[in-house]
Length: 360
Picture 1: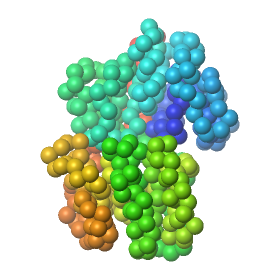
Picture 2 (picture 1 turned 90 degrees about the vertical axis):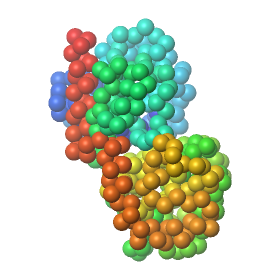
Picture 3 (picture 1 turned 45 degrees about the vertical axis):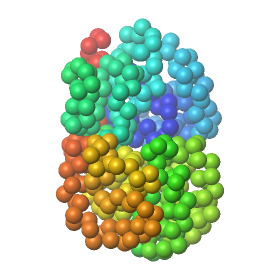
Picture 4 (picture 1 turned 45 degrees about the horizontal axis):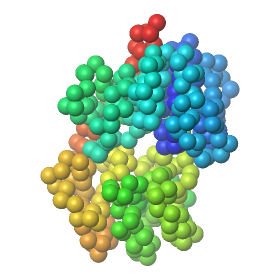
């Protein structure tokens, strides 16, 4: 069977725990881990070590020797003939689902989630090409059933990334023990606080000096906002600032685990942060009327800032007001992430084995 590690490194924590679980449950099943960059190849090889007789890392057509991704659609087109001989393929993104959508393939595609939350792109028609869609929670599953997906095509498994064990570090190396604040704006402009407020948010947080700052925007924001790298570079030398837009720590859960306070807009990373309820503040630079919009359900988990001058006061009282939001956060995280019992990869592996049995 095939695992498709063909996209950004942010997808890796949503797939690799399944590789490990499948190797434990069915060690006789051969796994091909298809990679598109040397960066992904090195990470996987380091974790797997030498004892992997039934797991092969394979380079996809168009493989790049660095971190830069090859063009995805040409790569998939060239990979398709090799996958035709593979009974099951597992992916965590939608681009790979172009293959079963446009080609008459017998390969069963199992799609697992990357990211969670109320703004997920559930209506993308490529998702209907998956043999089975695996989502974290029953609440998320219901959103697909409401869209006409057959009940046997969508299953809730829990949140796979919660079982990812290869985090980069527990806490960045700050000089003191001030509270850690994570600012992670989203990469899509209509959902992000960066374009209207981001530069000023960074300036005010740095000048306040009240927190150790982790500035770790979404991995794809730098593609859309070319000035991002310069803005972060101007403050990265400060002892209370840890700026990161390139390392694997940005996507492996290191920063959401380390932070004491979350500051963001609509990123699903807040739900990972809320696995352990802590203070959160949300930025609303466009004054969205969000209260009755289910797409913004996560904003009920903390104070929402509608004016930039309210930013520092809101952050200053976030810890004191956390008692107002803690129960809401716990309910929301449980609803979105499903059971956090560490068995999500095992459940996904069970669906993969079912797909293999069905093809036998």
